[in-house]
Image 1 (cartoon, rainbow, N blue to C red):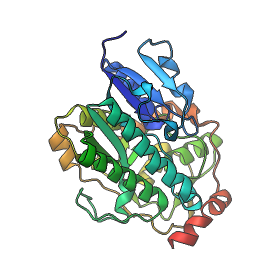
Image 2: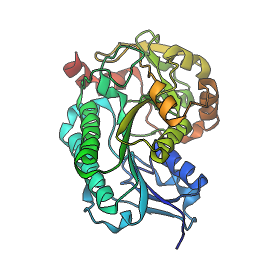
Image 3: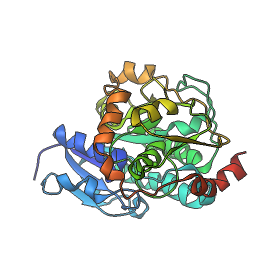
Length: 330
C-alpha cells in the first residue's frame, strides 16, 4: 500500500484531465481516474498503465453512490468530467444538465463522504456570455446556451456543498485551453481540432468572420498547474478566472499554422474577444502562465498526427452542423 497522497481526476482520459494526471504523478501523487471514454481516450493514459500508483475506472460519473470505495483515502478531487460544445447542448439539453449538474452532485457527495481536503471544479468562462474585457470574476453571469448554464449550475452546486456540508471547494473558470490531446472526435467546435485536421488534409482553414476575433488561449500544462495550485492552497470557497491574460487573434493562429484560408459566416452569440483578468489567481495562488502561444502551437504541430483521424470540417458540413446555433442564438 503506497503512502503517497491520493488524487482523483474525473474525466482523466480527456484533454485537460490526462495532463492533470501527468502532473500529479510527476509531483508524487497516487492517481485514480474516472472516465466513461465517450470524450476521453485510454491511449492518453497508456504511459501510466504499469504504474502501481495509478488506477482507472471506466464509468459514468452519474453511477456513483456516495460511499463508493474508489474515493477511499482520496485527498484531492479534480472534477473535469462532463460534456462540452455549444450546438449539441442546444440539441440535447437534458443530457447536458444531467451530466454536468447531476453528475457533479454525485461527485460532490462522494467527496463529502470521503472527507476530501479539496474539491476543485472545472468551470467555464462561457458563464459570462458576451462579456466586457478583460473579464474579472465579479462580472455578471449571462449563460446563453445550455452548456454554459450546466457548467455554471455545476459550479453553484459545488459552492452549495461547501456552504451546507463544508466540502472544501475551489472552482476555476477556464477560458480557452489548448494543447496536445485536445479532442479529435464528435461535434464541430474547438478551433484547434478543426484547423489541425484541415492542415493534415491540405485543406484551407475555415476562419469564422474575418479572423480578427481574439481568444485568451492558455496551454494545457499551465491549466493543470493552476488546478494543482487551487488544490494545495490554504484558500477555500473561491473561484478564479484562468487564461493567459493575453488574447490572440484567430488570424495570428493561422499565421503560426501556415496555410490557405476560407472565410465562413460569423456566428451569433460568439464574443469578439475573450480575455481573462487573471489578477486574482496570480495573487492568491502565485500561479502564472509559462508557455507562450508560439511555443504552444509549435508543440502541437510537432504532435499533429494525433488529429489524423479527426473529422474533416468544410464550409458545407460546418453550415449543416451549426444550423441549430443560428436558429436559437440569433
